[in-house]
Amino acid sequence: MAASEQNIFTTTATTDIDEYIDDYVDEICDKTKVAQFGAIFTPVFFSIVVIFSLFGNILVMVILARYENLKSLTNAFILNLAVSDLIFTVGLPFWAYYHMYGWTLGEHACKIVSFVFHVGYYSSGILLIMMTVHRYVAVINPLSDFVSPRGFYSILASVFIWALSAIAAVPALVFSKVLDQHYCGYENSYGKLWGIYQQNILFVVTSLVFSFCYSQILCRLLRPTVQRRKHKTLKLIFTLVLVFFLGWAPYNIVIFLMSLSFQPPPAADSSALSANCETYSKPLDYAFYISRLFAFSHCCLNPVFYVFVGVKFKNHLKRMLKGWSQSSNSLRNRNSRLTITSVASGEEFSM
Image (cartoon, rainbow, N blue to C red; front, side, top):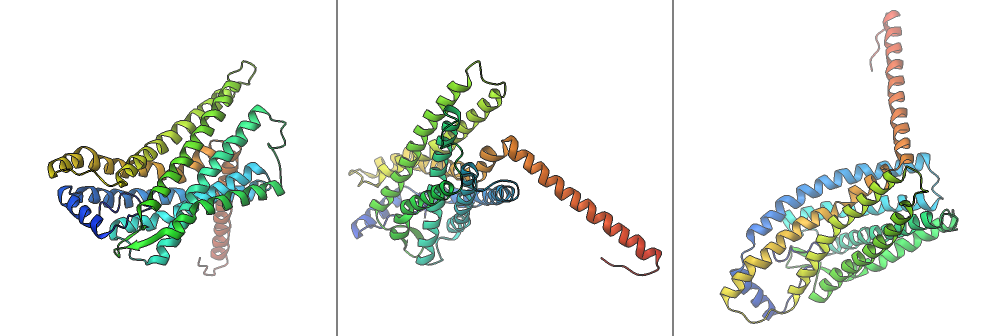
């Protein structure tokens, strides 16, 4: 179980010889405790992430629908990011179930869940890139036509994002299979490597865009002519970059290191295999579980850092909560008046 659970996306199908080698290695490198660690902490953490993600992203969508112009490119990006995070979140309960019981939902469900999950994963990364570039242009060249286009451009950007995300997720739809009636993943090591390196490439591109755009924004904000609000903006940018790299860098480093083990291992005796298991393989598995938990929590952190830290959205949230409070008080006052009236008239009144 542990060997096949190392990657939530993929599982390697092997030939008879490879299966013999894997069985031999498994006898020497017992990963039962590693599998138990993943089976306990992954469902618990994913459940917490799902709750906060649903609450935060649905709240973002409600605020956008009530108070914002959805034809604005900025708002279109934020709306698409919320939808992307919700799509990503939909897959987490399935993977939590998978860690506890194995895959028992059939091959079609395996393909669909993998595809939908990857669409949410890649669309989130693409959106963060486009939002960063948009923010960069707004600061460096605020008079650019790219800063505040409306209508058609917002629709065009949304179509591009989702089309590119769907194309990137096609391998998950095509190559995902149910293996050994328990595991949902890619049927061979080539598909597994393809999935890992796609994620690595997305992380590298996003990192380069983040580093360049935010460094240029920081240079502009550090000019003495900038308003005093720059300090809050600098803190926000520092937080965004720090959270992004702390969340995604360890995960991408770990899955890249794990991809190196997909090559046929050199001949070695049992003592060498046992030493490699204790000093490299097991620690890497633990690192994978832990780093993945932090990386996948981005779907509930995005609403906080990309929306609610803004003054406009915080005002919208206060306005909405105030409206709900007033409505609740009005309803209670109305019920009180109805109760008093019914008592005064000698009639029964039930709510």
